Image (tube, rainbow, N blue to C red; front, side, top):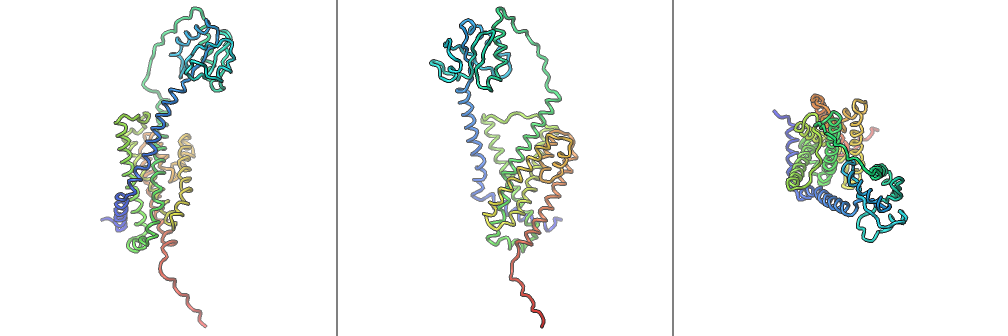
Length: 398
């Protein structure tokens, strides 16, 4: 048989969930995060194309004609074998010109971006460039000049490749990246969605609806119902955003970079991700609901939004800091502290195959949700729910 408080919480949850889902503002809430993503994606794609077309670095060669020809041949022979992006080498028809002057002006007939100039001779090449470019290309210019100086350079020896699918170091670093990606996604979702709970009680308090509800059902059941209603609304938002993202990927949009498989496997990792999101949302939401219950106006809620955001950031930074220190007291503290436990345990799922700690952590987080909801309901009843006339003081007997 379902306890009375749970039935009352289910009624409140259904009432709030339907009211939010079928409101006009919910559609705007769903579309809100999509506009920055679309604009950011378009701006990034256009910016990358412009940078590729206009900022392709080139190294100008201001050496004697024969030495320039040999340097270009050596560059063509070694460009594919050198690591990283090797800049193009172009011959400059400017004998005797100061290399600094060449970098400071646009040469007629030269459409590329001149980032450096090699002058001098093959025995003593001089690289003129900014400090970053000079340090980056010093070794490359020396290697190409050494090959160009040889009258009969030997061909590059063929290298036989013996490739392996993976290694222990690659698996470990890949799982750490997966853990970081999981923490970032969990943080973004909770920061975007948990803030809704702050203003959940303000309108009902202003309309005196909360007093009617408090007179009908227990206050902790009211808090719990509102909390799970907002969690359900958040799940609907995640489902809509995930569907839109999947449709864009199928339509040809470039997807996220491939992440290494977590230690527990992708199906279980995704399942644990949803559970830890629910727990992180309930923990932060119960705390925010208690704080929002103390606020009387929308302005007070807006004032509280900044410390609430800072709290979320500090929790995320703490869990991220603990990720780099496995086996230390810092990691243990991040696993035990309720607000950071979801972030730390999701990262643990990416690096460890043990499952029993997740059962223990989920139970521990659920206990703290119940404690925070109970405490918030008691504070709300004692500090806010004070209706009715004050009792007259008894007169002292003469």
